[in-house]
Image 1: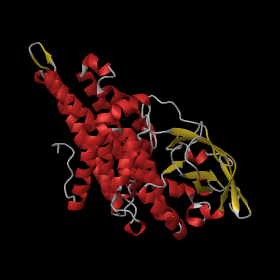
Image 2 (image 1 turned 135 degrees about the vertical axis):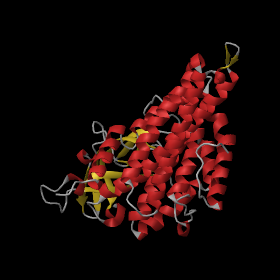
Image 3 (image 1 turned 90 degrees about the vertical axis):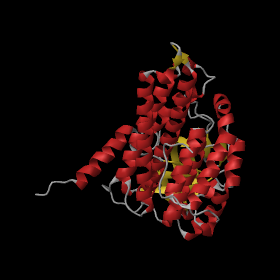
Image 4 (image 1 turned 30 degrees about the vertical axis):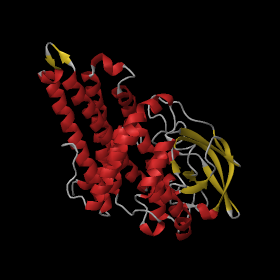
Length: 401
């Protein structure tokens, strides 16, 4: 166990879970991650290992076959997984956002139907808000769900679905205008639909097409896709919570969990970059001594370690706030913003410590250098986080009179 990024006050069960995950990462993920990433290969064996460990059910309540653990346990688990390979943490993240949304907002029938199979990993989930050309402007989505008897008919194009191909359940946000008078705020006329589909690409059910994987700079292995709905019929019983018009708040609740997750990923990648940097600095010699003995490198290591520690502390605070039942959008936004920015900086410093070898695909830091930028935009860009933080601060510190 490293000196950095320790978490005080954990239970014996939490420590046991994290030790098991850390051992799995060291033995099953780190030795194969770079090779799989270079091939953009889906980590099937790693996913099967996560199933056996019960990690797909980590936050799902025990009555549905899960472990019933807290967001903090999940975030610390994600930190460990991302230290091994960030793409693997993406496979579990979207799954858990949907499981959390079902647990918090689903009807009893929806919970009974989905959560037991999600706990075992038999059903793996994705969620979808973004559309081409929208980015973080979720309120401007144009995908529609129109009521037709006992069904809704969904039409539109979605973008940036993590697990879009491998998932068999997608939580999709669409605009539904029935029962909402003209002039209703856009976010009050949105609904989350629970769309079941076959894993794979092409037409995966009538009216639903997953065109294929988007080719990315980093964050490889995990499939990122578009989703095209053209007359997709969904039973009204698959509206999350059984009531239309509440989808925006459902999604934002899930995204708060997602932002803690992205912060945890940033912490994990930064910790791995620090480990690589401090190890290489002790092995590489220049001017007759290890470069770790040069003050310029020591300064870098000191800055990197401080950033790893600070990001971890903010991430833990945001998770604990959510677990306590309190609103945590301010803390989650701050943690996501700081952890992703610090991750980028720590990875770049480790890259610089490696010198020319950091540019070689033989060295792990090259992979991390391409992965870190995704965290700057995932679950809302840094600019969006700063808007959220600024607005919440003005609410908290409003001048009276």
